[in-house]
Image (cartoon, rainbow, N blue to C red; front, side, top):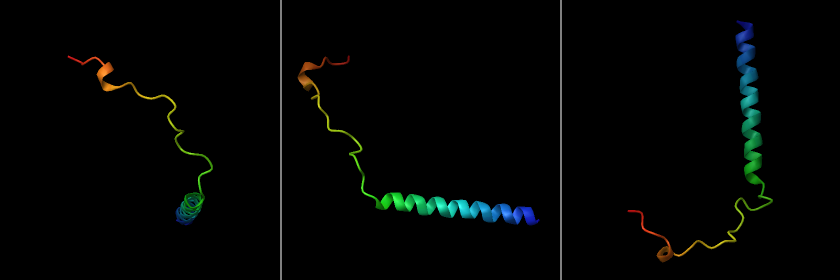
Length: 52
């Protein structure tokens, strides 16, 4: 029984540490843009062939 209780509390400790870590990451500003700006323009719709 003791081992089950200790396993539960060690699991809870890991979960709490992970939640605090993720919350800390959410508060930090991003260093780089998640998606770089598009450098190539998409072709115009009239240049595309219709698909049957």
